[in-house]
Image 1 (cartoon, rainbow, N blue to C red):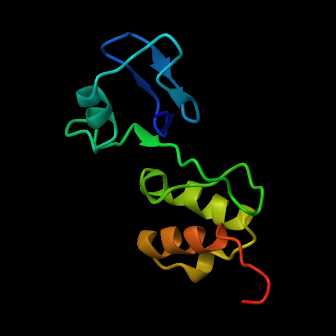
Image 2: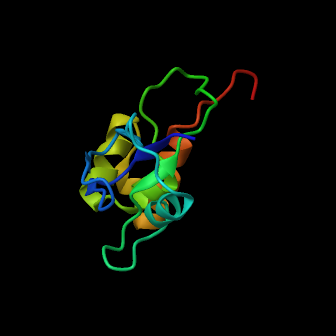
Length: 115
């Protein structure tokens, strides 16, 4: 199962550098389940999640950029506000991080006609 990198890191087992948005693992690498588990949970020292499972179903709206809750939690306030603006939302309507994340998730969910 492929994963998407949500925070830059150097894989200590392979010495490979991974950037946000890249797929994990690289073609020639076969990480253990333990390593995948370590990278997909909040790291105790760095307090970040480094990878998340890529969902197989495609978005109905054809958008190529969609953020998960864990990705949004690792972003700064200004990064979250920029995403809200990019999604045609009002960042001032969200009073705190939880509301910003909720707003982003709502804004990137397509509304189907007839609803």
